[in-house]
Length: 373
Image 1 (cartoon, rainbow, N blue to C red):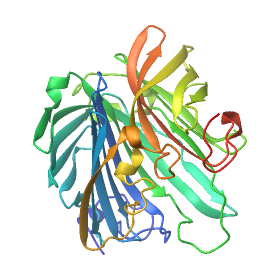
Image 2: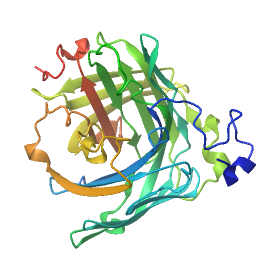
Image 3: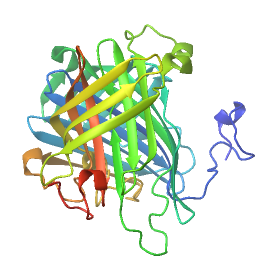
Image 4: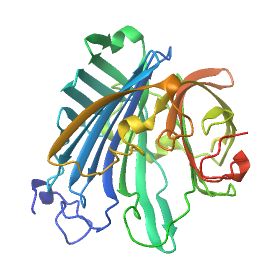
């Protein structure tokens, strides 16, 4: 299938742009966004994913207010043209690539929103994630992350939240693409679950820090990356500025020290030690103040998993009372925690994402879903 974008010199194979270059069912392309105020009162997140070999596009929006997480999800058939990023009542618009995006939700079972994000950092390209099991690709993908500020409003069940009344509403956005869940649904011997993942994008007034870690069961990292960037004012940079890799400090070293809430796989606190390329020693301390369940966006969801076929168009809404969540429910171990963060005299806010399945020796975890001691 030929698309107008085929007139641009962007091809990486002999195939037209809309032809997938892999036949993996795990092939995907995803947008992710989150946002929060500095009082910890509101946290929201958005995701939209495309799964070319499953012919599925799905999207979701969740907001946490007063201890309740409200979730709406949409899924539709996506044949060949993946450039229309609207799924039912959820619309993700790229207004200016790498600079400004807009999210519109048109009365999704009582939830509506009109949100615009503008970046306050350059693009951080994370090293490619590659993981195989006996030669078969489990994951092979790339992610970029940027820090953002938000404007607009959210309405749920008649309650209107105007972001400008909350002060600064900030967060991050990422784009990832490649293969994830490459073995899902394939025949072969069962693979014992083991996955350790932390991801911590953090904003201060003058800078932003970023780190990502994947460990195997004995605590050896098979993926580790970090970055430090300056934070600039909304609208003060052009596309050439935010895509300039020289604007991103790649630290010489980074390590993390995590403590866990007893009986859970959720963090109690984390300290990250970062040695920047310019010689600055950063000790970044994370104190969780609010929890967001990633299942609200479809991650590990038993019925609305990413890329699951739900027909031509399907939409749903539900809610999670956070105080009632079983922390060892396998659908609920994946979280993002909004954290109050310090780095020396700096005060900031960030997100500490965790997904820990199976054993992890440094954490004292030995089973598939045992809680921390």
